[in-house]
Amino acid sequence: MGLFNSLKKIFTGENTQPAVVVEVLQPRVIETVVTPEPIIVETLTPRPGLAVPIELPVRDAPVTAATDQEATNPSAAAEVTEVTSATNLATGLTKTRKTWSQRWNEFMANFRSVDEDFFEDLEETLIKADVGAETAFKLTEELRQEAKLENAKSRDEVSRLVVEKLVAHYQTQGIGEDASMHFAPAGPTVILFVGVNGVGKTTTIGKLAARYKGEGKKVLLAAADTFRAGATQQLQEWGKRDGVEVIAGAAKADPASVVYDGVRAAIAQQADILFVDTAGRLQNNVNLMQELEKMKRIISRELPNEPSEVLLVLDATTGQNALQQAKLFKNSTDVTGIVLTKLDGTAKGGIVLPIRNELHLPVKWVGLGEQVGDLQPFAADDFAKSLFGDLLEN
Ligand SMILES: Nc1nc2c(ncn2[C@@H]2O[C@H](COP(=O)(O)OP(=O)(O)OP(=O)(O)O)[C@@H](O)[C@H]2O)c(=O)[nH]1
Image 1 (cartoon, rainbow, N blue to C red):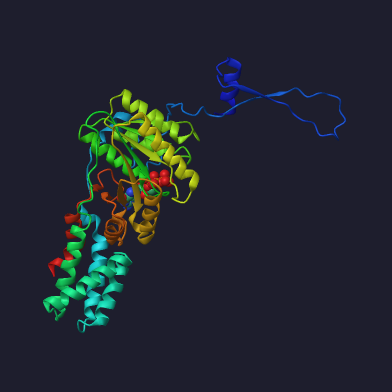
Image 2 (cartoon, protein in one colour; image 1 turned 45 degrees about the vertical axis):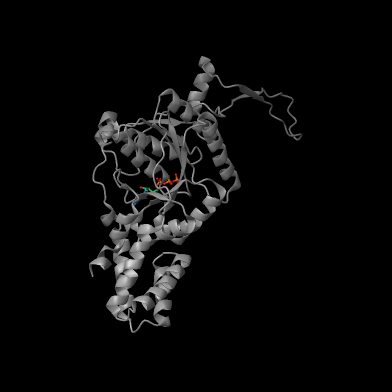
């Protein structure tokens, strides 16, 4: 609140905040006998738990930039809800696929014979392709046995064997894990998004809100990242674009209070889904992890019988680092699924395998770009085909 508004509220008696009287202490060296008047300072502490409507200027739209028309005409922005120009998996995975092919062709160009050197080099190539050390070791071991069994000796035979094995691993690992989203038959389902800074939590919420709204569900968003200046505004912009309401708190309000307001609003409005955007947090920050637990307690207290999800958002461009984050988050909170973002901007798409193979966490969604339609439900079979398409054709 600006100084002018603060003074105006004091003079017009609108101020509902309690006033604090601050006594100004005088240093001893001052010899004047004039006793200073006490200064009345308005307390600016926000009341936690109070959801306040926030009027936001439209600026710096994070993803599909709003046009001038949208900025002045909210209904024009709402029309953009329609999920258009979706990047498909094959296009989104272009970089990963090309890098895989290139590495594989380079590797096979040096092929001499199926011996121990070959398997050692293969293991190294797989590690470089982000399948994870544990998985690379396991795959190589299996291939050693299969090459023997099938008596594969020529370059083509071995290449086919390895590629088929890789495809099978990408297709089958994770079976038995539940990659679907769980919704309450009646009443709201709360979906909490967690992850480190900048991984794409807000963007994913914006994309999912549009998708589910398009399917006829009533969606609400809660801006529980009250920590980063601009985070609420970013979600508000998505809310405007998607035509869904955003429940927000005052700056620095307790995030749990925003979650509470969001859940109450979702119940009152008979919403189907409440997406909760949380502040970027490191899994080893004890305070922030406790804050997360508090949010979860509120959700299960207010909606004890409804399913809720905690989706961990990981940035695929960070490769092995993303895997590390997932391990640590999994140890400190109940993650129900993974959203792997920015697959379009990386050659590290192979990371899907160790996430499922070593962590046994289902990848539920993959982010393939910044546009509203650039999000796909993860399907192992399609993923494997998109990833190894070039190699399968050879
Ligand atoms: N290329 C690409 N960019 C993405 C994708 N998802 C998100 N981004 C971009 O990544 C940047 C960060 O996204 P945000 O949604 O703000 O990330 P966040 O996790 O909410 O960030 P914090 O609020 O700081 O924790 C933005 O520029 C997004 O447009 C994706 O799938 N592909």
